[in-house]
Image (cartoon, rainbow, N blue to C red; front, side):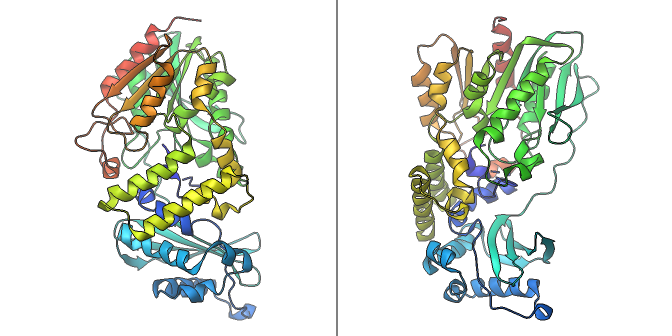
Length: 466
């Protein structure tokens, strides 16, 4: 999904990133001020007296008491120059303003890693579970301070294939054993050869089902298409399966493009698959990158862009923050306004080529990653390829909105290789609802609209073999 859902965490949980969906969206303003590595200096203590858990709670106590000047006084020169006392205060105050009062702190967890002591303290607010993450160096200085959404419990295993289904599921692996990604192929019964689709995730550390709260849109699409005679390959996203690959921030191609190209090649090699009829379906960020995937692999027979942004992602990120602030309570608070301005300034810094720390970049993600995203011109890339295109959009989508839909329509209104379908009741997950779209509905169990799945199957069947 677009970063309004996933962007609060860094790449190990970049992590739009979803009850974490609503949590992350609500925390956008706070993230602009507090997320990432901030370096604090603590008074030195004798090694035998140092208690990292106690020191961490002392920092949180000072923040809760509103003693932001005292905390700021412990910053080193780099951090003190990056964040003012006022920004620190606003970032902390926006948490209860958006997600309710703090109910309790949980038991701290301590890990020693690379010469540092890492402390994680759960923070349970009325509407969200967060983690305060602090890192102390060998001299007992606080070298990292971040507030992140708590990692959700692992999604339960997908329900078994129904006994009367007309397909089966096979376990595969994209890439090698060491660095590859676990995948599932839903294969229609019979000898084939069958047309096939690779599913490409939105932003964030998605599993193969693109689990968001109780919903699993990729599971719905995979099994729905397989039931209609179309094989589907879905896989664990690299940001979820191998976050260590993004230690330096990575790039949009490492996150999305490269693995999708490998997945298409793997699919073509499978028994029962028609290698000339392998398609790609990208959702949200995956839809934005679908034209590049098609360019990298001209053998791909066609591209389905579901809720795909047509505008620059950094611009949409700012817009989404403004929209979410209004949706939260009907107005933009002072804290939210400051956070949005901070985000706007960090976007300008990234685009201006200025050297800034990851903590100062949008959502605490390395500037190099954002520059790779900002270099994507998805509309131009879609025009440059030859594959047929199917654009799908929900009219109730509050993340990828009508301006994006119209951007695609304007670019391809006279193109015979482009088809468009707008669904009046669908949200960003292609799940039907009523009234204005909202974040809370992502936590309501639902299923991808059957008509949309049927439309995809019909479009694939109508495409000529290359």
